[in-house]
Each structure stands twice: as structure tokens, then as C-alpha cells.
Image (tube, rainbow, N blue to C red; front, side):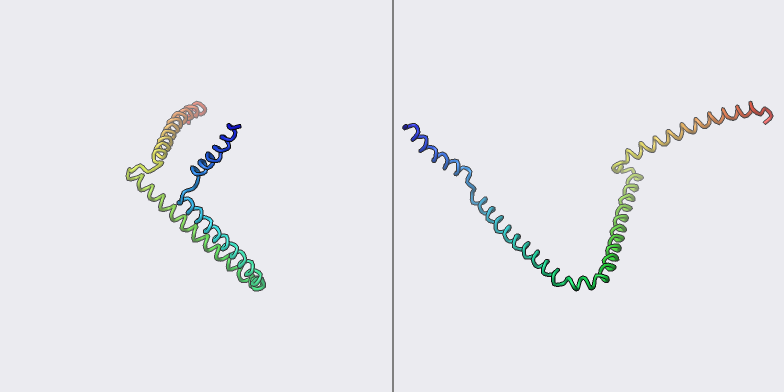
Amino acid sequence: MEDRQNQTTTTPSSLLRKLQIHAPNSTQLLGILTLIVSGSIFLFLTGATVTVTILALILFSPLIILTIPIWVPIGCFLIAITAAFLSFCGFGVAAVAVAAWVYKYFRGLHPPGSDRVDYARSRIYDTASHVKDYAREYGGYLQSKAKDAAPGA
């Protein structure tokens, strides 16, 4: 019986000791408090924004419906102009990047990927020389066959 009483009296103190070990310090408490306050402010602002947006749509929906034939063409035009401008800028940036790479390549500065270009160039040169040699051999073979077929030619 006494062993049980010792265990029950030591259990709450060990539990308190464990709680004290895992208890947050003042910096963590301040962080949690900041998180709660900023979260509640953002939640309030989100609710207010949604409420105002819904009320504005309800209030201005007749005006929106009446003027939609004006806004749709203007919106399409603005989207097309914006897409064209962004495409032009993107192609310009790509052209500048390609020009810089070519400039570095011909200056011998070895930009990224130049080893692949050199390898492809050597493969094309080797293939072209093999084709030229084969054509020379095959062309001579055809000329000899033509002389056999027409000895006077």
C-alpha cells in the first residue's frame, strides 16, 4: 500500500517536471500571441473584403449589365495589346540572350553548351566527308557502267 502512495505522490511531481521542461519560454509565447493577433486581424480583413465585394456586386450589377457591350471589346483589346507587348519583350530578351551566346562562342569564351555545338559540328563535318567520298566512289562506278553499256559514248 505504501508503494502505491509513493507512486501517486511522485507521479504528479514528475508530470509537473515534464511540463516545465516542455513549457514555452517568453519568446515563444510572444510569437504565439503575435500569430493570434495578426491572424485575427487578417481574418477580419478577409471578411470585410468579401462582404464589401458582394455588396458592391449587388449594388452595381445593373450598371455592369447595361455597360457590358462597352467593356467586353475594351477588355479584349487591352488583353491583346498586353499579350503582344509581353511577347515582343520576351522575344527581345531571347534575341539578346542568343546574340550574347553567339558573341561569347565566337570570341572563344566557351559559353554553356558550346561543347555540344562543337561535337555536332564535328559530326556534321565527318558525315559530309564520308558522303563526299562515297559519292566519288559511286560516281566512278556509274561512269564505268555507262561506258560498258554504251562503248562509243
